[in-house]
Amino acid sequence: MTAADPDGAITTEDGQRFPAGIVVAADGINSAIREAHGLTKDRIFGRDCGVRINIPRRPGEIAADDREGTVMIEAWSDKRRVLYCPVTKDAFYVLLTCTTKDTSAATSPIDPDVWARSFPAMRDLFIRIRDEADWPQSHWAHFQTIHLKRWSAGRIAVLGDAAHAMPPYLAQGAGHAMMNALALAESLRTESTIESALTEWERRERPLTEHTQLWTRIYGATMFLPKPLKRISILVEKLPWVAAQYVRAANHEPTGCTPARFRCKQALRTKRQRPGQCPAVAKLSGG
Ligand SMILES: Cc1cc2nc3c(=O)[nH]c(=O)nc-3n(C[C@H](O)[C@H](O)[C@H](O)COP(=O)(O)OP(=O)(O)OC[C@H]3O[C@@H](n4cnc5c(N)ncnc54)[C@H](O)[C@@H]3O)c2cc1C
Image (cartoon, rainbow, N blue to C red; front, top):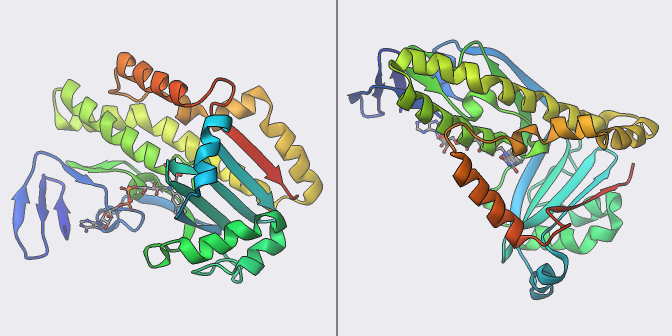
């Protein structure tokens, strides 16, 4: 798609024009459609970046699932962070984050010695990450937060990172993209005009999305605190009100997801993970 018309049409690379009732621009963080229609209110570049990769799990790690349930490990050391958890039975998802200035850490592939200096106990993991990840398919992303003036222009709806990119500390960017896509479909189904559907969609969904954008930045900002304050921030995170802000989106019942289906999904999740380990999160902090 090279252009979108607010009257409802797209133009493709070969110059063909296709009329449409609605155009959904989900063209990512560098959205050309968003820019072409002057929708950006602010685009904030953080001081942090990250890469995500998958590596194969070893038989012993897979076997441990039956004993320990699904375990997510998150470790912080100064301004570096490692998070990993099973993404399928056979693969670990690994997220590494650091500051954009930390050029010895933000390399593709990573240097295990550099990362093991911050997390000595994970040296073996870093060697696996260097050797087994699909590095040509990965890239270090500079984290950004994007807010729009409006989520739509005429009959163009802007969706996903194009509309509301956020740092991934709460792991909700894709979640919000999908929830908001479903909510848009629901709004189009229930409202009588496309214009009112777009207005109602943004009115209903935008507050939660912006809540997550704010709280994922707060979570990420703790890495820039001095060491004693970091310890305090970890304690503060455990306060029920603060903890509830972090998981508000994760606990939200998406618009368009009927309660019965939502309950069914929750039941499945609970069945897979043993009681008391749902999900098991081990958060380690090296200060
Ligand atoms: C390191 C990292 C870790 C993350 N971890 C998580 C996580 O754990 N959980 C989570 O929910 N989110 C996470 N996210 C965020 C998540 O990846 C994004 O929020 C999500 O991918 C956004 O989806 P999208 O479809 O809006 O954009 P994208 O995934 O960027 O997709 C946009 C697509 O549009 C295509 N495109 C662009 N321009 C055009 C055009 N003109 N015509 C046609 N197609 C076009 C692109 O090729 C691309 O395929 C993470 C992000 C990063 C950087």
